[in-house]
Image 1: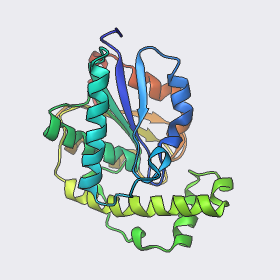
Image 2 (image 1 turned 90 degrees about the vertical axis):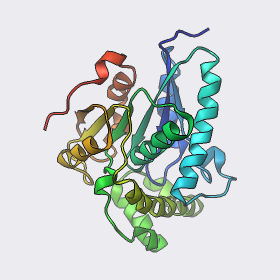
Image 3 (image 1 turned 180 degrees about the vertical axis):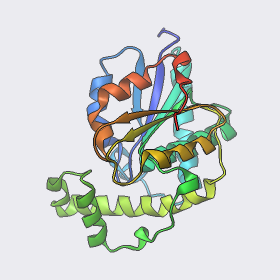
Image 4 (image 1 turned 60 degrees about the vertical axis):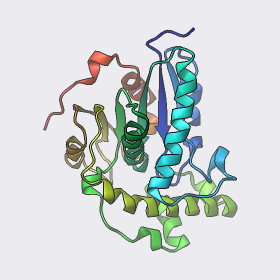
Length: 250
């Protein structure tokens, strides 16, 4: 039987990505006996690549909810009693939507949610990126510097990534329907000092989306810098319950 303070973390990938983006973290977290790190699968990608792509947000959130509930129920049998969520950028908002649905559908709530470099639903912009050409989306991925150029230069891989990113652009427009939604758990924000897409000030809007507390941790670097800050992320994920209620300075 595992210790009662062990927790599982469900990690949501950024736009266009899949579970593979967390492969390195999974290897490092495997060395700890206090945390189970579980990347969330997205239909049509990685281990779920043979499944049909879902571009309807409620349908996708419901599917992920079912997967998380089934997985967490199994872990509860081994003594794990708590879970948290982590999500970067698009994944941060998706994790928020899913946690809201988990509470409504199954009555379970994360101990806390870490949201990195994400635009709150109340600030989500209207845009037409989902209508961009494949070349435009590919160029966007190159300029974001979140995907190695060696992968983007491989035609078959590039096509899959473009399809995934276009799907997430479609889903992102649907985040607007959650502009007034709140969750019960504390939100722990990660803000990169040179993030090209979201400022620290704009992340304060997440205060409008929780009935609990909000805290913020600043890191150096650009939008994808969180992936280079494993030590900071792991420290936040393994905090004790009493450490979650740090105030957000404005």
